[in-house]
Image (cartoon, rainbow, N blue to C red):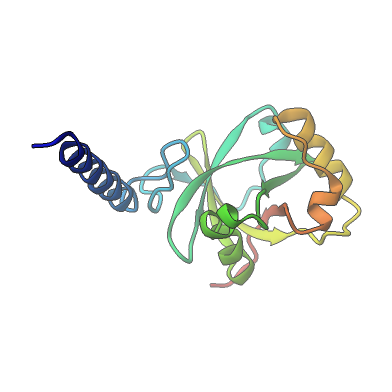
Length: 172
């Protein structure tokens, strides 16, 4: 077998293996690092009590599961004025338009669950308006906590979307 055929065989095998991994991740109990996972299967559901999110302000990430579609992912988080926020950057890039589907789903149906320390909290993802007075404070919190150069202008240009993980309102 020629070197080219051997190399192509290895590449095809790797593509099939990676595709199978991504397929099976849809059934996994939550995400694994940067790989999206399936619905949460473990964790204690916490309802009726609004947590003190400032206790989680130093935390780097949380796990978030959208209800429609039922997929989970790992996201950065910031706490501003006791409220919990998550960013989604690269929204106007070609890569982001393919990779970042969860923010579009969140705008259509914001019902979500977050998992922190094996506790699951029902939340509603609410997109923050680009001109909201909290945008500069949220961006400053993100810049002080994470690498990168996110700016208020990124949010205003729709390059970065911000979501509050607000308490779930009664209903479906």
